[in-house]
Length: 190
Image (cartoon, rainbow, N blue to C red; front, side, top):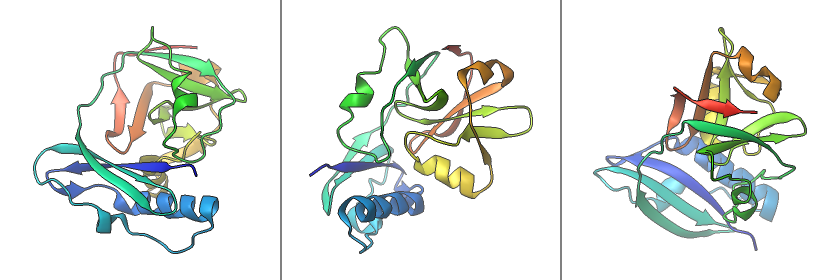
């Protein structure tokens, strides 16, 4: 049976964006395992009271493990657009297909699927057109930060092609640990 995981930000005892993690976990359990009994991840987290941690919860039909890992953010300066037909609709524990796409000469990749940009290997993406922050209509994974920012009308959905990158003034990454982070002094190779 395939295992999935959630990555939850904990800082000085505060658990971030639990509503959206619970939604994804319970949607995944329903769609993959036909389990309609909801779980509340708060019941499984014993948040460290000092420091920044990545809480990693592995699950399938039930919660399998909970671990707390000190978190150090990565800095990215170079991105490469890579084409793939990868399906990653659920946050599976096995990321081997994603990992095969990573190219060592770049800090990170932006995955293009069916002619449209989707995500990086670790985050959803957004581009600023001078008026709105736009995120791909069809990401590989519906990330919790992306979902929260869509719910709050901060992000707008758009089909984004690599040819459009030059039309945008800013580029941002978003995931549970970094939130919404505008990338400065970066290079994106189409």
